[in-house]
Amino acid sequence: MKRILQFARRFLLPHYTWLLASLLTGLITAAVSGLGVPLMVKYVFPVVFYSGSGEEPLLLQHVPALKELSATTILILACASMPLVFAIRGVAMWGNHVVVNILGLRILEGLRKTVFHHVQELPIAYLERRSKGDMVSRIVADTGNVQNVLSHVANDLVKQPITCICAFSAFFYLLFSSGSVEMVLALLFIALAAWPIISFGKKISARSKQAQAELGELNTVVQQNLETQREVRAYALEEREIEDFKSSSASYKRNIIKLVKYQRLIVPIMETCTGLALAVVLVMGHYSGMGLEDFMALALALFFTFDSMKRAGLAFNRMNEAQGALVRLEEVLNEQNPIADPASPVALPARVRGDIDFKNVTFEYEPGKPVLKEVNVHIPAGQIVGLVGPSGAGKTTFASLIPRFYEASAGSVCVDGIDVRDVMRHDLREHLAIVGQQALLFTGTIKENIALGRQGATDEQIATAASAAKVSAFLENQPRGIDTQLGQGGSGLSGGQRQRVAIARAFVKDAPILILDEATASLDAESEKEIQQELDSLAQGRTTLIVAHRFSTLRNAHRILVFDHGRIVGDGPHEELYACCPLYKELFDRQGAV
Ligand code: ADP
Image 1: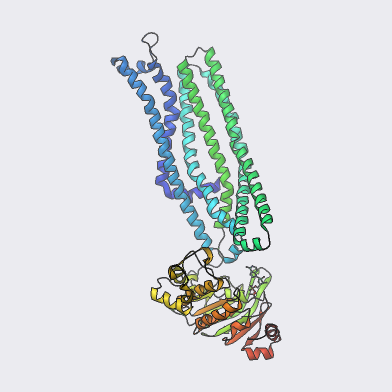
Image 2 (image 1 turned 180 degrees about the horizontal axis):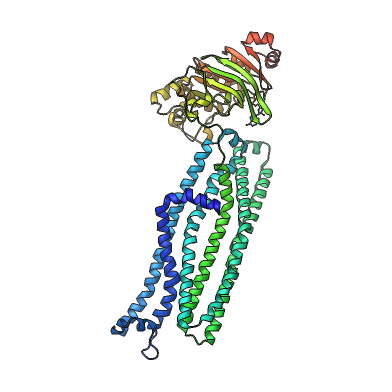
């Protein structure tokens, strides 16, 4: 409950005008339903059926002026009140529905924006640990679930109790005015009806959390399957994938069925209680000689009392259902990025020189398991440095500390002598370009993908970059040249072509520091050879770190750092290392030639 109130304060209150509109329309609906309908039955119906003899209807007794009117006018007025009451109720219900939906969509927008924004701030390590499908589920489905509850429940938890109070008041008023006070016994069933609302709450919230997690699991299965279609087909894993999907889908279904059963169990219980209460009123009404209009009015007031209680109960259940999604969203929103921007950042010059220093740097992904151990190295501006070593030695981790994707556990990483922790992350990354193993392209045109390298890049800069990266060479075969639309991840281009677009992006960025992390590892020998030239020209004049899996990519390196178990065990040019560093010699000989 506390949790939902916190979320309500944060995401519901900012839309207070819509909230007020929804409450107002809800109130009108509630008042017209709870009071209007029963009172109409008691006062208006008897006027219509009054034949002129016998006891005068109450409305005529209370409003003598009506007697001045002709019987036909009274009939018309009385009849007109019926559609009027229902029209007011209908319009208010419609308005309420529309307003609640607008309110809901605004909440959803705010909620998703906040969560998505927060995800952009989360540590890369956190996101790497999480399954993507589950994260998608949190950002899209859990937010939807919470929104649904915030908007509808905010409405129902006000509207229904007020309907209930109005109907309840009408019931009491009618009881006292008819003198059948003993019928209050019928209300005993209210206590009985309240029981399922309270007792199922906990079960519902537990089931709901499980169901949301299972939905995340299902998303993961689908996402993973779509991302690995080539492997799935090549290794004939379709059956296994279908089984995985079936099992995730079945456990989600089982949970939802249980959830729905608990959630709606309130309906038969409340309906039975309503029936019992009506039966009590009927029996007592019979023995007390009550008239039909009194009975009908009482029955309606009672019906609306129970009906609004039922709806309030369902809203309460919905609130419990949202607990699961709330917990999952809180898990994301409460996660803080330890790599925060400094309170008083140091401003970097418009263009850094590109000196890099690692001073006693130790880094561990998991406590107690250092991946880099007391690394000390100075890389002067403009130097092209190769990073080699066995797989898992710490090369990529080393390079990742410069853009501050991770934070050094001890020691410091400096650019131009300034500790990267003292600089705004965004500022720091302005001075870096990275070309990774897989060229990650976005949906959009080739031109847009290149332009991502620099905000406000001109057409000329894009064209120069495209030509330097030899993107221009394959544009002729593209249907719309540089404006050819790419699918997700750059589908429509070959691996080499994608890598060229990524290189062009780095050219456009024109950053003084360049990190090439196995940039040609996924390419065939032919494409690698071709792209190597573009990479060489990109590296010219920049401090360049080349995480290399093939020594052929290091032919222009001024210097090579040899990593082993998180330490630098060799540092120097090729000839020197080949002569003095056994690990380097071994790695090099295994590959053959430069
Ligand atoms: P290299 O680039 O030399 O192959 P890495 O820097 O990628 O090595 O990895 C160094 C070590 O850190 C490896 O043992 C690897 O398993 C571990 N490692 C890499 N990334 C992560 C991560 N995100 N979380 C935990 N451990 C990691």
